[in-house]
Length: 268
Image (tube, rainbow, N blue to C red; front, side, top):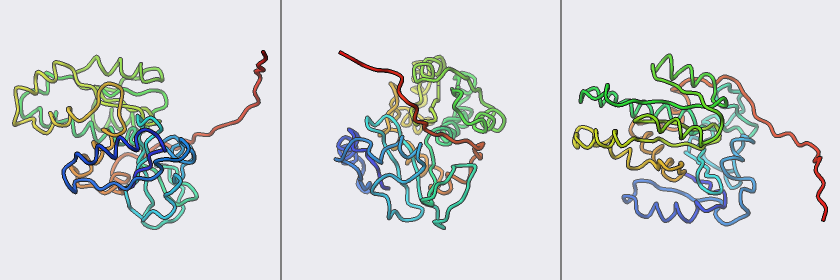
């Protein structure tokens, strides 16, 4: 995969982290490591401009690409489609660079939910009634994601005001809390009760326990989240294109930046 480091702190830290992974388990090509912070690169640039970051002009079709933000707590996945043609897609709002982005936000956390809904695993252990699971969203969530979670997955969705502090507070009330903002912030939280329960089933819930150990529950961590994405893609045997095509379709939306004149004047 190719990683846009946003010329931020994630560059050196993730490069070091990769050296501790199993040999050949993940090959990463690092781009945008030492230039001006967030200049035509980074998760926010990709999300807002819907274009490739600097250095990705010749990326191959169907190759997994990802961007951190400057302090590596946000993550966005993106790629070029196999036809390299411009399309107007309600799902991912493609741009004139003939690419489209796959956000970690709701599409990613739906895969987390389905992975955790080992409530498929937990049912086999008789624990599905002992652990609570919630998905927390804000008003910025795409409406089709909420509909999919409630109607197709039959799971509880809680809506809170914008901001990680509100999302995290609500998620922490449950044994398993999943939240990701549209801008890439987010994580999964696990209660003490959850850890107590899975400790009784060391073999049966080995995968779930490993998953909970990888996620950074404190605030969200793009480096850990990237590893989680890679694990989920391998677990489902999905390419990045499969990821984009096999889930719900976003309701059409658009985000713009509008410059306004400053009404403030500073003086000594």
